[in-house]
Every structure is written in structure tokens, then in C-alpha cells.
Image 1 (cartoon, rainbow, N blue to C red):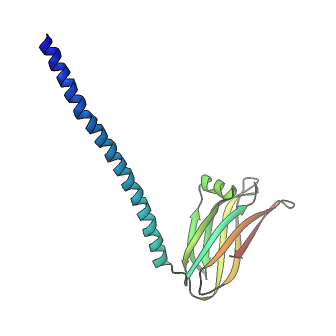
Image 2 (image 1 turned 135 degrees about the vertical axis):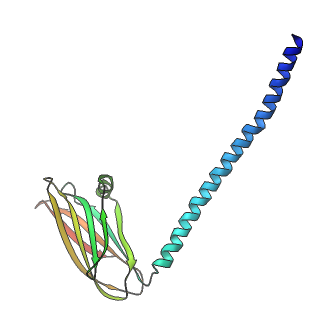
Image 3 (image 1 turned 180 degrees about the vertical axis):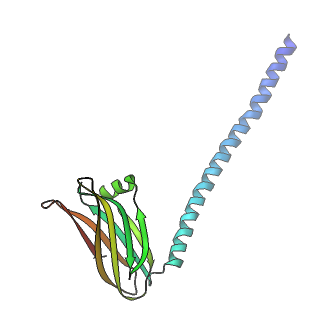
Length: 172
């Protein structure tokens, strides 16, 4: 009986001494894996920034942003953007994305290249009005592309005195 207890004690000691380094090794591996994941995310962000710089150099770049301050008068569902008569982008917003815009978010609708000179932008903004009816509004603006990056903000505001939506475009 004593031999069995001694054997069991020895086995338990061996098992414990083997498992402790294994647990420490597993924790070390988890930490290394987490560091690797963090470095990978940082590297992906750097690659995306380099890709943007290569595809859209500042000399050719124009960005179009959308902001909403329309209260409950208008819920954005989609935006179609034309530059110089060519459709360059169309985006459909989920309910969550539309709600984020209403809470003060700004969406980069488009980033792309255009040549230096005069250009025309047309935006068709679809949505749902206060009464639940589907509606579509349009906005046209001209801008002069300079040698630097240009940005345009499309803004949806509310005119509460007349309960209507006002669309505007501003060069930033």
C-alpha cells in the first residue's frame, strides 16, 4: 500500500512539474500570437495607406463627404454620385449607417482621381421623409480642381420652419 501511495505521489509530482512549464509555454505562445496579430493589423493599415497614396496621388485626388443634420425630416438610404456626367459611385446605407449619420457621423462617399480644371458634380440622395414616403433629391455643383487634393462636403440640413430638407455642397 505504501508503494502505491509513493508511486501516486511521485506520479502527481511529475505530472505537476511537466504541466506547469506547459501552461507557462501556452501563455507565452498566446502573448506571442497577440503581438503578431497587433503587428499584422498595423502592417495592413500601412499597406492600405500606401495603396491609397499610389492609386490616388494628391495632385489628382478629390474626395466627397456626406453629413446629415436633418433631424427626423429625412432618413438617408442611398447616394448616387456623378462627376462630369459619369457615375462614379453609388452607396446604399443600412439603418445603422443612416442612424450614425444622423448622430453626427460623416461618410466619405467617394475618393478618386480627376484632372486639374473645372468639373461638375451631381448627387442624387434618396431617403425617407418624415411621413415615411420615399423621396429623391438632387444637387448640382461645380468646382475647380487644383494641383492639391480637393474635398467637397455634401450636406443635408433641415429647414424646420417649412419642414423641408435643404441640400448644399461646400468645397473644403
